Image (cartoon, rainbow, N blue to C red):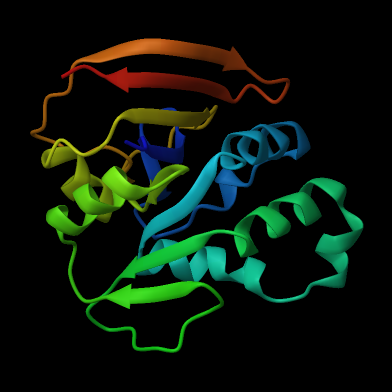
Length: 186
C-alpha cells in the first residue's frame, strides 16, 4: 500500500496563508526548494484542493526563466510527470496535463488509490488535507516552517483534530526554515 503524505509550507505559527490570503513570505529559497524536490521524487499522484492546484499549475506552462534555474526546472519535470486529482466544485475540465477533477473528496476513492498505487501519494491544500487527516488516510505530515509569525489566516493543520505523531526527521536550513517529518501513529 502506498503512503499518503501531507506536506505544507507554513509560518512559524502554523498558517499557509495570512489573513489576507498572502503567502509571499513562504517562497522557498534554493536550498529548501531542492529539499522539496527530493521528497517529490517518490510521488506518483498529487491530490489537491482547487486553490493549491491553481497555484501549482504554473509548473504546467513553459517558463524560460524557470528553465534557467536548475532547481525550478527539476521541480517542473517532477510536476509534469505526476498524475493530479483536483477536488473542486467549481472547476471544470480540461485541466492541465495528467489532471482530473473530482467534485468532492471521496475517502473510499483515496483508499483505493493507496491500495493500488506503486508510488507515494501527496495531498496538498489544507482544506482537502483536513478531510484526509480526519478520515485517517494520511500516513505522514511534513511541515516546512518559515521564521515568520503572521498572526492568523489559513491554518496548515485543522483545529479540533488530535493526531499522535512520531518524529522521523528534522532539519534546519540556512534561511532559518525548519523541516519536520512525522509519521501518524495508528
